[in-house]
Image (tube, rainbow, N blue to C red; front, side):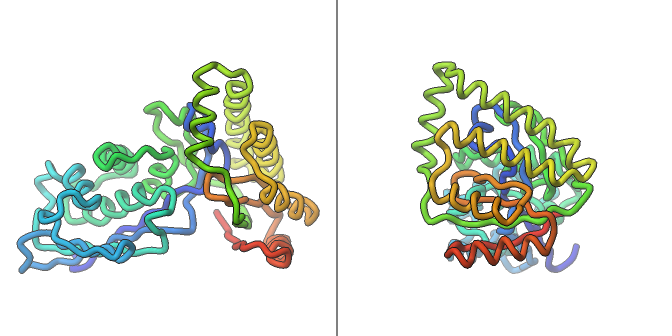
Length: 310
């Protein structure tokens, strides 16, 4: 075994299906730019496992702090694994994500599993990681979108047909690179308030909600071919359709709408909100248009970054 090993995992950026995925809809997502990394180092003199989480600024011995998320994840996932040492190494957690990052716990769990798995001969594949992340989720008491655990496990574009069922994600490989700009808004909808509002409508079999879930599933289904054959312009159109559905349900807000109008003027393929964090994701034709959109948004006072996904 190498003296030092590491594992890195990313939560999800939602491309299609946020909000409604948690009611049983479909979702397409890809790994975000934020990440959690777990580094494992052998420490033969240690009679325990030392955990140094540089994100949360906590450092402790696992058995002395059993209530910690890292301890719970380790015991839940590796407690019965005979090949995994129960002492004699240090885990250092670092990365660009924070505790407030949506999907942080999933990324933390996946990073720990990817690193510690290398201490053993289990040789878990991505499917095992995905299943074990959900196993750990039950222990730490988190109820998050399945897309976060899928992206953390597979580190690729993922499609989940029925987000509230036990169906496993499907990985997608874009035929062409996708040039995104992600813009942040200062204001956003209260996630808990919106989730409760949608859930109440869903329980009452509200036709608008049920139709929206069905329409999103159709969008996700259509996107599979566009990914396969490089139909990036069509993916942009599907993003715009997805945004229209969300807007009609009252899930958008003025600042996000303003961003979408700005980038439409610049000729972007499509744009939409991307979940509860106040982000708007914009798909551009290529790097030149990406630069143009980025400059336009920054010029209007918005914080934005560009990313290329392939």
